[in-house]
Amino acid sequence: MDVAPSHNSMDHSLPQHVAIIMDGNGRWAAKRSLQRLKGHEQGAEAVREAVRGCGELGISYLTLFAFSSENWSRPVEEVNHLMGLIRYFFRKELASMNDAGVRINFIGDLSKLPEDIQGLAKEAKEKTKANSKLVLTIALSYGSHSEITHAVQRLAKKIQKGDISPEEINETLISQHLDTVELPDPDLLIRTSGEKRLSNFLLWQSAYAELVFLDVLWPDFKKSDLVQAVEEYGTRTRRFGAL
Ligand code: IPE
Ligand code: IPE
Ligand code: MG
Image (cartoon, rainbow, N blue to C red; front, side, top):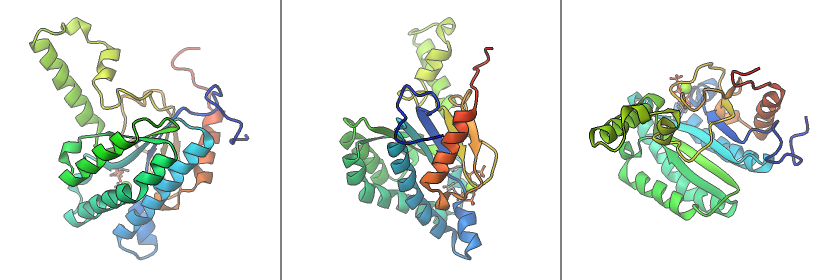
């Protein structure tokens, strides 16, 4: 399959929304007898590659799992280093992503992040809000169980106040109370590193996503890996339960 530049939004062999579980930074470092932190640093480079690749392929939405609600249980030095990298990434990449027409968006419980990162996230969102080439959503302190739990709490409060009745709760209303309210569901979900699990990522939203598991470790991820996953996606027949 020829992936670029002939694809456009009407081409169903091209996913509109790609979500990636960026996994394998630690194993990449261990293979080189380096500290795990080095793997995360190289992983930040791969983020740039993925964003550029999606832009070049004409993919409209990219969602990246950068830090899960469960990753807080890692050693404090690793968490601090990851926060440092997130900080550095925004300071360094915001201008060029803005120039490239990327709109930056976040999902997850950002209130758990250090305050200055919350500020950087707000700034990134605000500065890029008029862009339309690619919507880049970064999942930070994100976990589906926590997201769904918060949605249920908000719906329960609306019932308690008398704003809605229990019968009015339907799938659309639930989707509208998730962090992803402004995003279409992912068409293609990629996980790197060879692990074959979702690790609490976009569980509701990925009900009909095509799953592609790549053996490449995230720091080694290149545009060619994205192309490979998109090609695999193009061979799948999506039935959504129908015939
Ligand atoms: C993914 O790489 C990055 C984050 C989860 C933040 P890992 O750190 O999980 O790397 P492995 O899975 O240990 O190789
Ligand atoms: C998932 O990877 C989270 C991110 C990529 C941010 P993990 O490495 O945390 O997942 P598990 O622990 O292997 O399931
Ligand atoms: Mg991992």
